[in-house]
Amino acid sequence: MPADILEMARRRTGPGGPRPPGDRPGDGGADRPGGGMAADPTRLGLWLFLGTVTMLFVGFTSAYLVRRASADWRPLAVPVLLWWNTGAIAASSLALEVARRRLRGWAPAEAVRWVAATGVLGALFALGQILAWRTLAARGFYLETNPHHSFFYVLTGAHLVHLAGGLVWFGVVLSRVRRLAYVPGEDGLGLFATYWHFLAALWIYLLVLLFVV
Image (cartoon, rainbow, N blue to C red; front, top):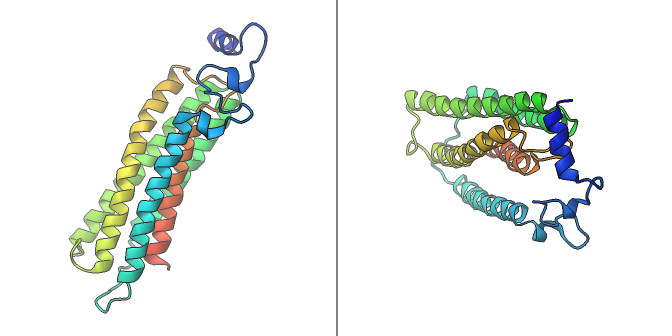
């Protein structure tokens, strides 16, 4: 095992052995009795943000279900490219879980590769979404063509905006993994994984809402 990794772990745990999670620098007391998310402002902030995003899409869903009952509603056939996009974002989430396991298993070099795969697959998903929009536009299906088309563009566009934010976060995470800023043996990717898996689940939900329900 590389000496620099061992030295980093030694500094993290201290000369007297591993410290309790709440006593480690940067833990914010999240694992102390009575701590939890309230003692970890970063984690709490993430969950509050995800709650806000959830309410946003709940509002979209309500408007969608009401508007769908109108006489001018003409369903849009699901573009085949969306199935490939779904596979890409699902594989991206899987790659991130592998990266977390590699980091916890003291294999930071492998974790770097799997984190990189997460971002590449996420970028492919984003590119696929743009191509899907261009394909529909080429067929004459625009935002204002039909209410179903409008909801498709708005919902998938809102999702892509949040995914773009996730890709920015991914760049930070990848840089930190490469610099060994996350201590091997610990789950330093947990917060990013929460956001990324949320986006994957949200995409599947939108796909079902738009083309299955």
